[in-house]
Image (tube, rainbow, N blue to C red; front, side):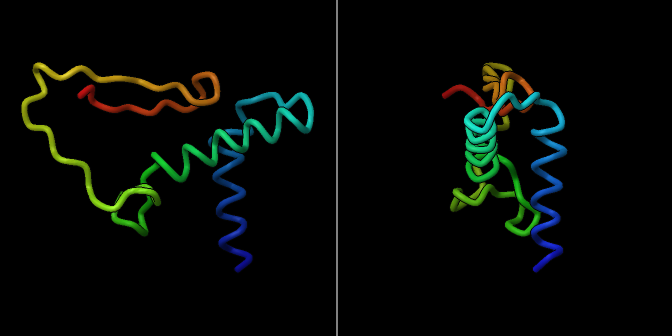
Length: 87
């Protein structure tokens, strides 16, 4: 179990905390909550065949990319970026 905890803590540090200056406890909670939402709703996981934990199936593959607009959502002020195609 220790290895799993170290893996998660390492991911949090590398992907979020190393890039943000934490000002106080409330700010730390806000940063960790934003990272948690990203981790559970958008970030792909190897153990789930590149699916986020909240997804039930792979997104539909888009073959005609010429007319599609790519949208970027900035998480933690741009430290993390999430990309989606516009509907």
